[in-house]
Length: 182
Image (cartoon, rainbow, N blue to C red; front, side, top):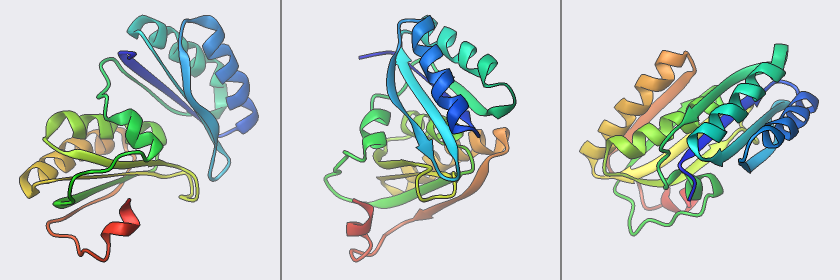
């Protein structure tokens, strides 16, 4: 599996498609996802070895010009980020529930990676932009202390970048809520 992930976020779909094409042409990376998100944003996510991802994101940021929103590179991304992006996680049980929400898709991926590395938690879903007004959120579970620790790590990143919307910890979510999370 690839060791790095890179994300470039745009406010123009046309520029995003153009730049995503250039990003994969300049280095040996693969597209994880490259598509439009609400409200009229575009995101290109690539993965590969660290140097290739750095080169690809650097080109993406430069070519984005005035359509640039945010970008990140995560050199040793948590392997749990990829199934969370696909919504393909199924925990054994839901203990405490953590929720992080950001204005930036790229920042939420960075925050989710930090959460997964900071605490013994299990990812539920990393939802990016669609139907969210361009925002993103990450849900995860674990014991209360782990979820609180994860939220603290994720909040620090989102606040530093200025994109935090909100975060919540639910120590014991209702069984009626669980099906809506999975």
